[in-house]
Amino acid sequence: MYIETSRPRLEDDTARLLSPTFNSKSSSVSNNPTYCFAFYYHMYGKHIGALNVFLRQKGQAVTDTLVWSLTGNQGDRWRQAKVKIHPTTAFQMVIEGVRGSGIEGDIAIDDVAIEEGECKDPPPNNLRSLAPPSSPHIWQHCITLILALIGQQR
Image (tube, rainbow, N blue to C red):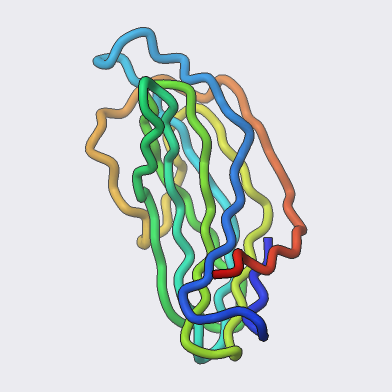
């Protein structure tokens, strides 16, 4: 996914990418499986906005919980993020790019993967989850994304 910040984009415009829906293997709230959501990101330029990742759970109501966020210029290089999540119902991952204050700043993601089990060697910018750890790796679903999204118009 790549968010372009040129006109007609405005500050705080967003582009969102939703994963397929995954069924959590949880049989009870006290037995939530652990998943690792991993991706590479590139955030470069003086007007970088934000890159956010939400866990969208689908129960009686749909809830979006912010599980990872980063703002500002991160340099002209690719970096990896790994986020530990503990869904209790069917879920999706939502990746959101937010336009900054000007046109000099692009955000891209690539090599997105989700697998059951703990994240191995999580990077230091991982927001910690409060849920307990759980079962080992059972399945893996990888998606490589090269998608040009220009965001939503206001």
